[in-house]
Image 1 (tube, each protein chain N blue to C red):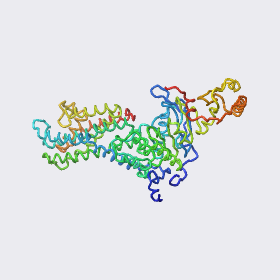
Image 2: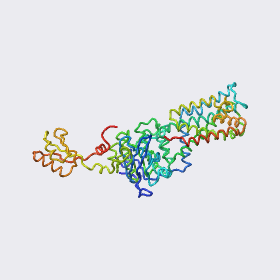
Image 3: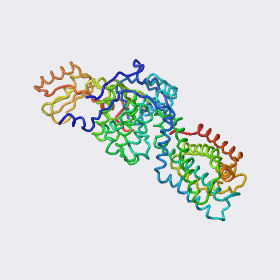
Image 4: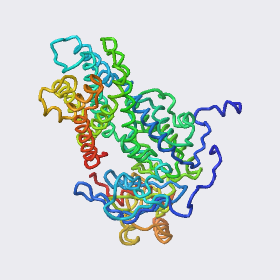
Length: 317
Length: 261
């Protein structure tokens, strides 16, 4: 259960937390953003999901005012990240992918420094405890492990009590316990009315943490929706029966494009076809004709990973 | 488990994350940043070596070696003047360039640019930190000067203030220019090498061997201005104008070419 009360998000709550339209950016002659558009709602977690080099970090940098897009528009809390930078900086928390923490000071000293730039920061001790920073509170930042730095960077992004926080790969290099601690704090922030935009290439993070997922590839949005929406269409129909069924005749009964495979002895999967009631009926009547009881028959939902790989390709790049 | 023990369980400290992002006032942010940077510099062994230990050793050296020509005037005062010039270069140029160069490489500049500090506040904080460190150097080197026989005439340090301020402005801008255009390892090498070169022949501690041309270098102008101020309680307008010109030119170059990442 979340600790603390959750007052409503202040200031123009009607607008989106982030609205990006037709963003284009070339870096070093290479097109990084190619007409990217998305909208992040307030008090929700929006995940930009994509392979390395998809343009996630550049998108976030444009929203943070660290990069200027070549064209397109960016509104952050209804404001322009460049023209209204002074008004936005106190209200927006940032965690950079490469950390950006001062290296010559102790971990909590760095956190206190960022806190001191605000008038009503979070309690540094409580935040440190929540993110497990106390065990290395006095260790110089340059001596921290990657995961420790990562958590400190998340703390620095949140310590000013922002309305909106950008987290660029918050879970990279974290062990499972630390990841859960970060997810807990992110969920708690959302419950308190904070809008969160994070980038990730971890399916599990997008699936379990995000209210909305924006799949980015080659500088464009290739799909977006809730994790539920993205994985709604079942990918396969599976069942168990005796090994060695003559599946060729089943295939001819199914719609064109369907594939039937015995994935392991006695385990069958029908793929390549939209799983609807008629496909199920065809399958069961074929089974009846062959005196087969299809045990455990049912549609298998696609995972976010299946969707992601279908959209962005399976080959390494 | 009792309720109080549960409340103390790790990971459950009360945390009010509800949005309330307001920036501290500009002046407080800049002072906060300056104190932060000055603390880091004063804790860094290499920086202390460069900004305090070596200048003190140079001070002792030049007052003892009678064969070194320090220029016209009282020897301990001229030595203190030259070492103050060296100290300004150590802190404003070499120290600031190295710290900023690595902060730039490590993304610290980018992160702070997104904080309420912003880019202007970050630069202002750096300048204020340099001024604070130079003040510490003046106190330490003044005390060391007294130990080697310097008896400051009234107003000698006051007369040095314009030269110190213009020197800080010119060399901080030059240090930032280096840090903002060259990668960190290159900055480290150039900043240290330049310190040695300027110490040897830049007109900081000893009058420049290059004569009038040396007076056009920012180092020569700073050395000359401080020797005039500390040695003779005079404002040397020529060297001060040269320093001002360097400060303006280098600041414009920083505005034009400094890259934040």
